[in-house]
Image (cartoon, rainbow, N blue to C red; front, top):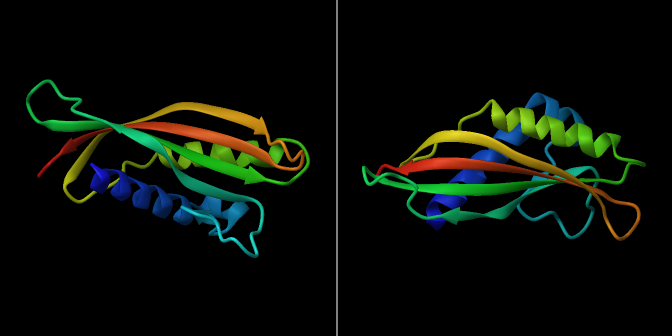
Length: 137
């Protein structure tokens, strides 16, 4: 199942890096792990999530995958973080990932959460999606 999780993460990274609305705000700053030096705000990180086992009715092998996309902004207030989170939501809702060995049958927005980080400077939005995936191999 790690193959599925990694393939989906790569597809999400590619989608967000190539989406015009997302790139207009964060350029190509979409990471699995942001750089430890020279980090520029705003940016997006991907990686938190979970894969749940067989989600089919016995006709095949499938999984339910939950993935979180994190938005980070240092602009005052929430407008920039919310604008980026909305762009992420739109980009992922309108794109069904193509994954080798898997068929993504459902792409569903689950929730969006907006947080003020403890440092008092950083605004953080979490955008969560659910994917139903059939294993082809």
